[in-house]
Image 1 (spheres, rainbow, N blue to C red):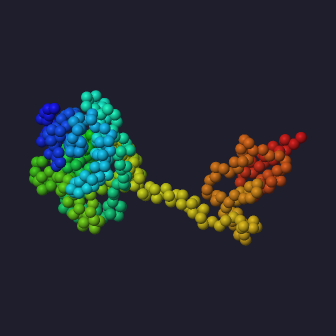
Image 2 (image 1 turned 60 degrees about the vertical axis):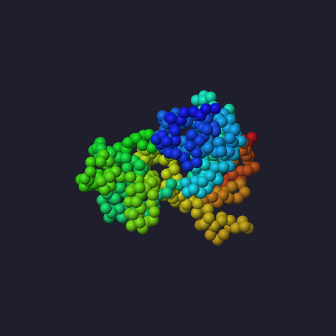
Image 3 (image 1 turned 45 degrees about the vertical axis):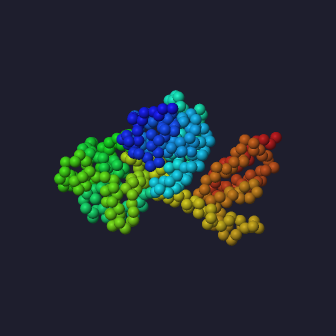
Length: 428
């Protein structure tokens, strides 16, 4: 079988660096049809995905195809792959070297690899490729369950320390940190802002963040202090680079931002801080202080509220406030003494206890539920459609009515009056 031409998706093409283990020419020597199918797929997704996404997919497909050709030389096409190959590949992945050159791969990388393969299999089947698998080969259960850690954010005291340290830093360093802390920008977004990113609308300044990671653009309100810092930065520049912020006559990059942030964080005494933590910090601060999820999503450029809801999980002050509102009621369950002694005679403090517990007299005892705790079952028997009574129960009903009247339980008084009257009317 003749190897296919690889000119349109060769490993030397832009965005596809040569892999450490396999390249497409090597794979095509053993499995030409498999290589052609994968390269055709990569050419198609390159029309709709960003280069970085295509590059990641390229590496994962090459890794799988290279493993197949090295361990199963009988595989010449994708249609020859079956479930046993997937199960063997799953066992191989945890032993494969990661970025550090040592195994194992992280569960997240394994999940991404298997997920990318599953998407590939599904699409080539949907697109009716002649080399498509005969059946589904990868299922949800094959993907490792991902960890769901909370976003790392700065506590209010640490955030305050950082901003105080930034106020004493070199002007451009202060501008970089305050831009991240007050706008929630991603690092890449901050680096890519052009000179005309600041606009004035409706009497205030806004930052126009162009189409980025999620293929959307947005406007972020600018704090007056940021407007002032940006003006100072613009006036002090001696370059004509089309960037909102430059560093020493060059475009700002993410590595410079990380170094600036860590230098100021060290001065603040709060240890290492990653730039993305400032985005998480702003979102958490906003939700803790009542900003709606919709507004936070618009500020951060989230496409769905599901992306924003993660910050609701870390809005600890919101949880604390809700807890404090019920803690007094919960404490009543543990701090109040019981209403009756075991002998049924009550205690010397029964008068005060009756006030505290607002006792309700039942047919054969008392309900000592604290007054601040609502009960949806109060008088449920007497109001049930299957409840019946007669004059033989009148002494108990009268005692319950009198007990309720003594304690100003008016709705219970009305209930027992109605039951007593109904018994009288039913008497022949």
